[in-house]
Length: 403
Image (cartoon, rainbow, N blue to C red; front, top):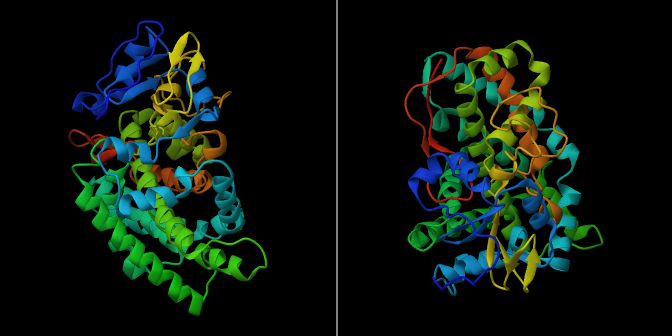
């Protein structure tokens, strides 16, 4: 890894973001560092820690998403992973990004999401019935992972018989978004190849027999007389939707249950007041969000709040840190389902790269939390939580609970 450009500014603390201690309790590390400065140094660049700085960075156009820069640092100059990184929406900038986002937004409508709500409830009920019979669970395997697989699969027109396959591929592909890209490259690229082949097959099937799903709607753009996705763009869009719609939501649901297991009074309140489900989901997203933020690379020399940021500097806008900034959220380490959010939480990012699937994720979380609270009221941890290591998508790897 090449040396980072030299920044100048107030003396800042160091956070070892590659350590197991950091992954197990990122909030303590952020809190200590934020008492000294609005940013910290890490092995991979800078990390911004207060709400003002994170919000600024998410909207600042003099940075680009790290994208291929991360592959350069990992020593991956070519290959299928680099090709895919260059095609997906989240790594596009400027006019190409606007075009892809505009096209998928035409198909990714509130109607598409709304039609899934009965299926969300029925799927959640099926898994909850299974949980309630056992009184104990490894929650990630039993609920948090399979539930969003079914939702995103139904959205995209994937047959139920294929859900388990693309769940395994999505789990492996998540390793591309973190610090283990180089060491896990064979596993990542194998999963990517399988997902791309699957997407091609799905498109071919839905061309012959379209349905009410999002993939069919994306294909239909070709005959609508305007802009449409070419075959490479369509493949990239489907793979990133399969991955993003499954992995990030899995982590957020698991983060939410881990939080409630530590706050039984809030769990009992939600069971008694399911009308607060969406507010509960929003507080979970603030308090323990699964999105750490996507690193940015400075395109030119930039000065911000006394900090000189040379071109080429990598900066991470830490949503978990911003979401617990006491200047914006009084008593930020208090989990409060009735908290008023004067400023929006930043787990879904901001600016032109705001998460396209934010509405779907909110509905998924908001549907399942009150159902779980009602059926498994005495929720508690049944052992230590094992958190993911070195990933920008945070969440428990294992979450043993009893109820």
